[in-house]
Amino acid sequence: MFEFFHSMNLLPQRFIFRFGFASQTSTFKGNYPCSIPIHGRRKFSATTLSLATPKSGEELLLVVGGGAAGIYGAIRAKTLAPNLKVVVIEKAKPLSKVKISGGGRCNVTNGHCPDNKILAEQYPRGHREFKGTFFHTHGPMDTMSWFSDHGVVLKIEEDGRVFPASDSSSTIIDCLMSEAKRSGVLLQTGKVVTSASSTADGKFAIKLEKRSLDYVEHVEADYLLIASGSSKQGYNLATQLGHSILEPVPSLFTFKIDDLKLAELSGVTFPKVKAKLQLEGIQKKIPQLTQVGPMLVTHWGFSGPVVLRLSAWGARYLSSSDYKGTLCVDFTPDLHIEDLKSALTRHKSQFLRQKVLNSYPSELAVVKRFWKYILDREGICGDMLWSSISNNLLISVAALLKDCAFSVKGKGQFKDEFVTAGGVPLSEIYLDTMGSRIHPHLYFAGEVLNVDGITGGFNFQNAWTGGYIAGTSIGNLAVHERVYQ
Image (tube, rainbow, N blue to C red; front, side):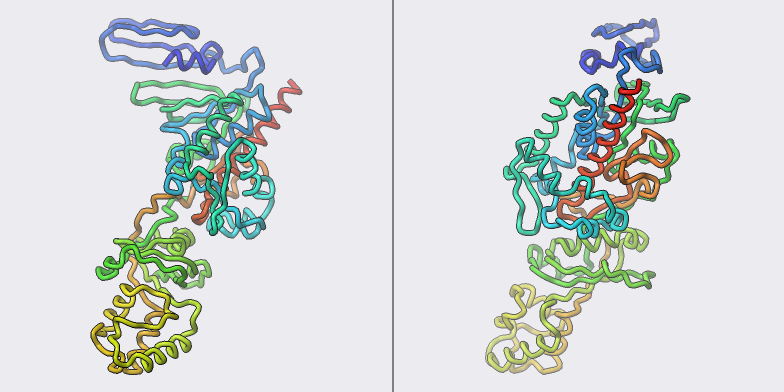
């Protein structure tokens, strides 16, 4: 541990470490590796050696969170201000979300939104605020250029999602970690920042803990960037520094459906449906609660882009309704109901002697298993001949295909992305700098803010943009401060 701190070059400037034992206390000053073979319960603490700026005039940026926003922001700040000490504190493994996103491929960004206003519309929380300069400063094309310039080959898939050509998130992780190391960003893992307060001279008194080792450390930072995602750590720090928090609720999740027969269709996909989410107590019309696109049947209900977008836009409403509601699905959105009726009538006249289960209009573009499901819901035996199907039954089948209601009984997980709605309100920061409106030299980036996007690379783009802007602001300010010291 001491060797590690020695490599961080923090010990000689700021700390005296004290180890306390039941029988004796020994004090070590400076950066000497040590081990003490004394038995007994160990108490370990650190006290600040000096809250003054080191003689070298070196300032410290402390970044809370080693995710996409934190690492990207740290690199940017260090690149602009090489003399600024940049330390990232991460409680677990750095870039862990990057590793698992996109099924382990890492959906870096989205390449189909060149217009920033259209891009802003992909954020249920943030769509109004992001129509300004946010993405103009650093948008998807800038992100793609940054990774390309740092040796990552990218590809854009048909739906706009951008992945490394290697189809491995390790490519993105290696790139970021390599650039962080090259630029001189320092990383400490296994620690949690438990408190932050302002000092008389406008700096930040930071307390770090490593509970597994009964360890406490006190640091004085000139700049603080909170990029801790949706963890309570970041929310607690924000409130300690005077910010409010909008209650976090899940976003981007699948729907659990109360229908045992639907589970038999697990794996069936629909290239295009129109789905509308209806929730009790929601009287006003919300356009975003109707979505069009692909949908997938799972063994617990529905998933796919349509459902994920509905879950994002309806995140707060669903939370307040205990994740219960009605999903109304149009399985033939490109066919008017009269055209659908005509197609069913024509098919009946052409295949009178065939069993209704074995043939159905090609215009429906559905698989046989789903056709059987529709017949079962209408109480039609698949062995019946088309000649036995009345016109009223045809009308009922057409109506069901155009408006099929499912009872939503809960939410499932979407393993490719874990996203939260809620956090620090955007009204409490300056989006052109990502700086706090309450505290000078305090910055936020990423999911700690009340921002979340739909699936497709938009949540990472928020992280890259926020981190870049915050890093730019801090780096430029640090250079300015150094010039005038």
